[in-house]
Amino acid sequence: MTAMQPSVAGLAPSSRLSQAGMSLVEVLIAMTIGLILMTGISILIVRQNAARVELAKSSRQIENGRYAMQLLHDDIQLAGFWGEYSPPFRITTPPNATTYVVDGSASPPLGTCASPSATAPTNLGWAAASMPTLPVAILGYAGATTNASLAASAPCIPTADRKPDTAVLVVRRVATSTVAAATAVTGTAYLQVSQCATDSAETPFVMAVKPAGSDPFTLTKKDCATKADLRPYVVRIYFVSNCNNYASGQTTCTATADNGKPIPTLKMVEFINGTQSVVPLVEGIEDMQVDYGIGQIVNAGPTYTHTTAPVSYTNTPSVTQWEDVVAVRLNILARNTESTTGYADTKAYTLGGAGVINPCANDPFTGAANTAAQIASCQSYPRHVYSELTRVENVSARREQP
Image (cartoon, rainbow, N blue to C red; front, side, top):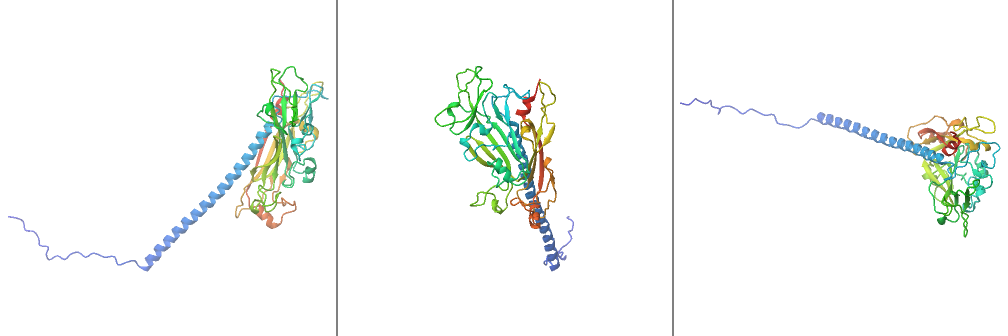
């Protein structure tokens, strides 16, 4: 016998609520929430993009400043490098016939600028005589030097492009790589140093511009038979230019350079391999001031001891002090290459012995005081100062005594 099952025939099915749609209020609330979320996300994206752009600008500025300092640092350390020739440091005054004279005159750093290949060695500061003459390793012009004065003393520098009140630094040396005497190029200035024991100890070098059809390089290696190798003479002049690229059809920096927004640029006039050229190096370098560390004689008597470290600094050494420059303090003001909307740099900057610099005070092209609009435009670029002290190795190291 089976159990009786309850009958379900009389039970009505349970009713279910069906969706009848959304009310207008619910739609408006959903749209409002969506708009708020979209607005917030859009603002976040815009701000992140703006932050990324400013970070990229700052990164370029930092890298430009670092790179400019590195270029100058490396060349200053090589200043006064004369290859195999290491002149005995002057230890008596006046110098005797076994020492040398240093040409510290403010003559044109590259000699005859219009035709560098025809430059005589004497115009480059060299003379092989019973008392050899060498050029100073480091030479410079203070920021206060006017362009007119600079054009008269150093016509190789494109003063029409030079930013007013910025320093000029000149480095002299020979190339770190050698060339065989047989491959000397006509019109190129070379230094050849003798390594033969029987050659003159007083004039153990030849500095000459290779002429066509003749060979002035006759010094030899240690075997006293094979011609000694040559090193091209190098002169580099560093200066701050008002722009990087000229406007179309222009040969100097103008307000229309760099697409109407001139970018101050560290440039270099280089004399090497018989040619002279202007080379843009680093954008965004707005100012450069240089202080020179001067060594001195520290005791009197028939023998003189000279310091290997500077005892004083000046940005305007005298003619007789240039040979005693044993260190260089670089002060560089770098700015972003692009402006920042809403930013105002109202600061002034201290650049070594040049004192306090206001980068927005004067028009870089005319030198006249800037208008309010020009000041506002100038102040929209973030800036940073870089400073470094670099030893002139080839000058100070020769002063070291055991």
